[in-house]
Every structure is written in structure tokens, then in C-alpha cells.
Image (cartoon, rainbow, N blue to C red; front, side, top):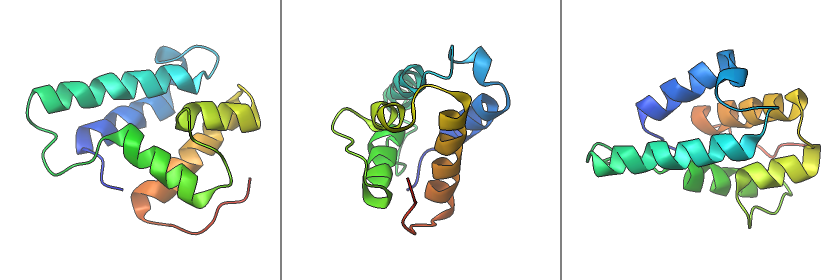
Length: 108
């Protein structure tokens, strides 16, 4: 997975202060923000060789978990784990694995 460095910087800020970016740890809000962020990078012609975050992360979640991602990675995680801080922490764990190249199967 190779998201744009600005996307990873944005996600780093979200990890520190999730309440500033989404209410009640609703990952669907974050997924929508990331779609817009990638669209902005694409429109500014800076996405370049980097991948769209949501598409790449959905593929990663699908390949490393047993979750159905037909409605996106956020819905899959929320369906499986509920809307809570622990689900957000699960997202951060998956994100770390995705961005460090750890493709080992995750337990759900």
C-alpha cells in the first residue's frame, strides 16, 4: 500500500486527536474525508504514483481479514467491531500493518 505522504500525515493527526475529525469514532466520516482528500490531491495533480487511500486500504482489509468490504473498509470495521474507541484502535493497528508492509493475516 502506497498512499500519498500527505494522507499519512493527515491520518497521524487523526490518530492524535480523533474527536477533532469525527464524532463518536465514526470511521465512515473518516473514510469520506479521505475520499475528499484523495480527490483534492488528484485534482491538484499531486497524487502521481501514489494510491488512492480508500481503495488501497479496502483491498488491504479484505486481504488480511475475513471481513466483507463491499461497502468500504469503514463499514466493514464498524459492522464487525461496533462504533467505539476500540474499533478506532483496530483501524490504527490495521493502518500500521498496511503502511509498514506487514501482510500477515490479522485475527478478528
